[in-house]
Length: 338
Ligand code: GLU
Image (cartoon, rainbow, N blue to C red; front, side):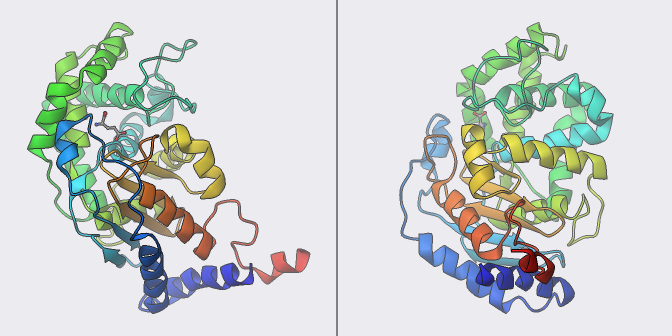
């Protein structure tokens, strides 16, 4: 316990002296070394192009409040963002129309079902939440209606601002998913039938498949996470990318729904808002502190990166990051009460 407290104060020390990252770098390298040999899990192969990814890549990155990124391994290897995009298109929609109007498009209830389940909330006839495919496709449809033909360019611009560098998308992964994503197409029609949007289903899905094909690195995810942690301002570029209320709402939904049907276990074990993608990425946010990005494409049965989950859990434990860890503030006041 005491060790956790002193490691937490390591983040405090970095906050007051941004150059003092040596100890943190050692800790991140240790976590990397601990899981490097773990080759459990399989690549996502239901999108044919994803089955061609080199399976044993592994990188971890932390985005700090100073804008600095501490990273190890394949932290600069590009992969497709996949479902992590859902957290950021949702934040965009909240920014554009606010929480009340967004609730008319998609709810905020955890589903407990697999990410690609074809169903709507029986009470509202809307998707349960924006972190599953129904919800994310609903958000894409609404963004298309609001932004027109520019919608995907605006998504790419916003993601680039959050990452602090110009991002691109993988044309082959996009085409691979467009040609095989029949289940998502079924969801697109279900939403159109429910009048969640009136836009042509193929146009909505093109946006959704393209947003999933945006290429990022673990370091990009760390900076995107740090932008969210920093209340919507990119700590590297100092640019405001998202408003305060959208960030709060998106973090709440990431906390309860971000890790597919493993979200409850994750909330208890790791205790951080996060989003994973079948490309092997996990993005986690330590509110008002740091962003964490991990890339390792071997997935468990829920579609979450095996080493990504282990690394986040270990970092959370070692640095005392769990949102409800009473000791994580390291305050002598709290310790005195125990
Ligand atoms: N593009 C993927 C799909 O819709 C994203 C899934 C994911 O990352 O969970 O099937």
